[in-house]
Length: 56
Image (tube, helix red, strand yellow):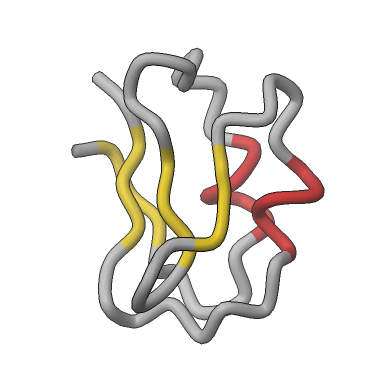
């Protein structure tokens, strides 16, 4: 199951640079994870300073 980013995201960009497959991009309100590209590695969740990323 792909990871998702909640509204707790502060758009710092840390997760985007950590994603090994480039599945994260800036969305309208905050960063978003493309579920079709996410490989469920959890690297983004571990890097998020606000704990805004979890498995969906």
